[in-house]
Amino acid sequence: MSGTIAIDDRTRNRALAGGIWGTIVEWYDYAIYGFLATIIARNFFPSEDETTGLLAAFATFGIGFVARPLGGILIGRMGDVVGRKSALITTLFMMAVSTVAIGLLPTYAAIGIWAPTCLVVLRLLQGFSAGGEWGSSAAFIVEWAPQERRGFFGSLQQVSVGLGLLLGSGTAALLSTILSAEQMGSFGWRIPFIIGGVLLPIGMYLRNNVDETPIFREEHAHAAKAPESTTRLAVKAFALTIIWTVGFYIVLTYMPTFTERQVGLSKTEALWSNTLGLLCFALVIPLMGHLSDRVGRKPVLIGSVVAFLVLVYPLFTLMLTAKSLAAVVAVQLVLAVMLAAFSGPGPAALVEIFQTAGRATWMSTAYSLAVAIFGGFAPYISTWLIKVTGTPIAPTFYLIGAAIVSLAAAWSLRETAFEKLK
Image (cartoon, rainbow, N blue to C red; front, side, top):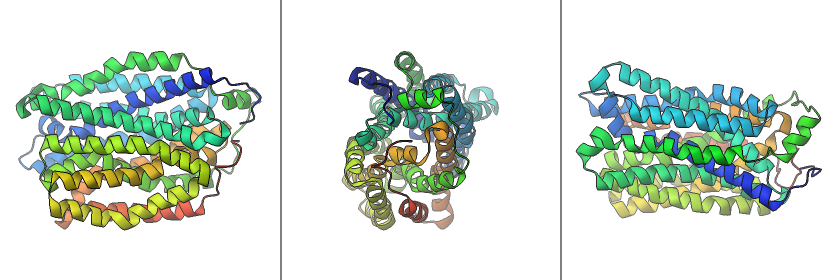
């Protein structure tokens, strides 16, 4: 950061709070669908074949990601032209409204084909919002960071993503514990979506009362333009993101469905186990971000990718062989640490690839494309792979393939942890 604008700790902490809380709300809203996929399948995609209904539900989950690149481009552009703050207020409002609408949506039994049709439209709106949120919030938080702590500050963006997922998983687990299966199927599944609207005013207040990032104000004042040679960097960011997004949506979103259907846990056990994994994920991320400030982004990122390449097959085999809650919890904790090792330095690494003038647009676009193509459909692809191969270990093939691509990208990165943000 060039440092011509003085920053006091109070202003920085207020900006950080606004960025973190808004992202928690965003990702709670976006991910709650995945945790309730089996119930949503029965309510919106009734089928005599349970797997077919679940595939339809996960396809709708994935459809939300189709709109993410468009949101990344348009809202990211807003962040680069108007400011990060305006982009983040827009994404938060759009996400909350579409989430509450899902919670109020009549089921297939009430309005027929209009129910899944409206659900798809609302998931597209959620995806559009999430596409603009990720890059804008990562840029916002890292641009507010002191130069020597960008990895740690950037990791807090991922902590907030993890906390949003944790809040969603915990809410679903709690409701599954206190309500019967019939009550969850009839009205209980709606409660988490409606809660998303209740959280909106807090997020809007915090984001309305923060300042624009200092480096953006400096660059904007000088009418800086994004360099022309950014496409190659965007391709590298895209490839780097693949294992991140595939691991994220298999380890933290699809896992309750996997452990319930393939390992034999009850829905409540599967949700609580996933919640413990999310808690571990959120706690370890800042440690990994801090580590990347000390040793660099590349060693931590490469270590994470290699762990996925080597360990996912034996870890999934252990779950499927032991078929116990203890084994599932142990595996989910290990997977959470592996993913946290990427999520800690990941935001800062992507922010540092691009220059300020075009950062939000290029980051959001590269990340959202990777998520749309590889991550959003990861639950669907995992379910489909199991069906066509006849083996429940099949999701590991997808994870290993993603790790190979991202390892090449991580290896080719220039170390940026100790350079000034441009």
